Image 1 (cartoon, rainbow, N blue to C red):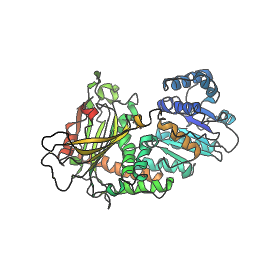
Image 2: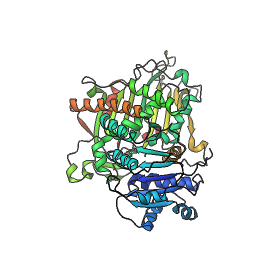
Image 3: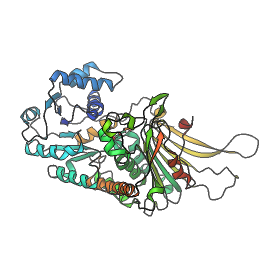
Image 4: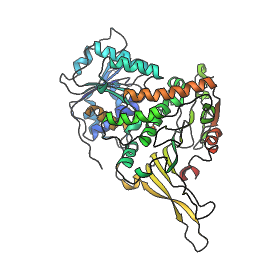
Length: 493
Ligand code: BG6
């Protein structure tokens, strides 16, 4: 197992510390890193939110988050970890807010001072302005912004400009937690630490690529945000496009943030856009109706919404066919899809190679090779090869995977949550797994183009039953091209 390298002492101020993201991800991530001795005892973890709370109540809240995120909660470690914690009731958007108590607990040296904005994007600029005015930045100050950065290119520009007026670009960490997933980082290793695939990695050998991010979860109490965002802004603009970039980008000449971002931007800028002729045939937007997941009945999307949102036409599913207009990828369709309340949770990339140019073995025996990269769950990869079915009869071929399961290969290893890795990278000042300003702009430019084409076409909202693989139209999207979504054994079982 790779070793944990301790980081130096740091202070982190989490805005929105009582919210979901903080309770479910950030606080447990910090606790886990502490338990592995990666965090120094002189570091401080300062929670800020609106609402008075006794110190003991804050400790209870943090303890509850940390203990519910771990199988074996370590009481002794908790006692020591809890000494790092403070809470302050501050409305950061109030010009008269009193920051003195926060200043009082921050270290007075130049150690990394991280401001984590686990709040709605509209608060990013006001909070950064307040931090600047209150003189809270030290020499090691940096800010972390959660995706989505805004809701379109214009609002993203406003955020980048406002935050950029207070923090330099190399002190701004734009978080897309997919980049912190072990298996997502492994895409870089697969492509650039192995010689095997590179000669095949282009339109010469690849027929098409599918990227799926399917969830069984719904909006999980984030109705107002999710309903205003929808699947495209919530997942496609960031997680899906990041996966696409890692699969399609040219080899960077180093892993420096600047080089990696530069290659990703080229891919995003080369993505084919949408017009009134192709929008209806190359995209699907859909919302889930009631259905069953693992035998539990799940209400339809609007049934779970408050009265004011009952007429919602927000998409909870999107399927999109796009292409990358460059020398390597011209002519290779990229099929992207994501959905809430699907049959199974899985994030998966399927690289389908071309069939052999001449079929020696007869009808039905020309299955193409496929490389299936499973990002979650059951992390691993499978390379499907044609083999002869044993037996004395006629020559019969079968597609069998060369199967690399991370669980089997690294059996003693528990994967750290993406936030654990990324938080430690913020402390180290390592930007390579964070999105750059131009990258976010390029992703929004393509996304805005898609969303405005949907508006112009008044794109029909399709429906699918919760617990299924999405609407029929998404299957037809590939069927029209003589292709089909990959069905892994687990999903067909
Ligand atoms: C978040 C989205 O960015 O990613 C959520 O806002 C989604 O809607 C989540 O559920 C999925 O992350 P993961 O790590 O569970 O695949």
